[in-house]
Image 1 (cartoon, rainbow, N blue to C red):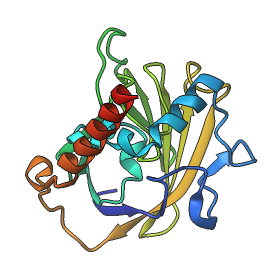
Image 2: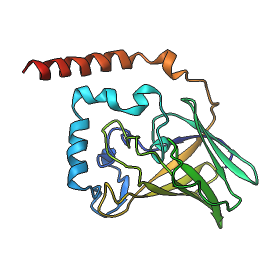
Image 3: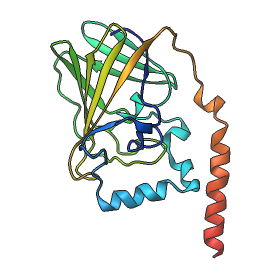
Length: 220
């Protein structure tokens, strides 16, 4: 699996149900997230202009799983017999052991979660738990919670492409599990440094929008 990859998932970081004509959500069959009513209201709130400041990735926090797989940035996969490691451009990573170890204790919560992997034939299966519930699924603000559990599958389709599939179970937010699928493609690039805080010109603008909305609310 070693190499530099980009996901062929245009638009997923703005909204999983949009897809730009491509079905990211393959289960349920209608392509809709089976979201509970409270989370649907929170999703609507997050689409307000002033809520852009609340997206954790705007503050350079890791994107979490599975969002880190469809952010429009490349990533490098490093593989040994004992580990598969995902290195992302914005100074984030996931180290996936393949030795059959159990997950971390329930009280340990991480931005990227705790991932353990195993092989089913030539398919890499990664099981991720222990997420902290603070991440967003995308800039559109789709919701996950501390109860999120992700199972990802990487199946080779050709010498340069893997079929990627992720099933998310989160009973706090969704009425049933849902699954996204898209290709990831090997590219002839190298991983470059992306100094998130130094290059972050959006955050002051987003903060100004949030402050203006708060001032307006208090003035009413």
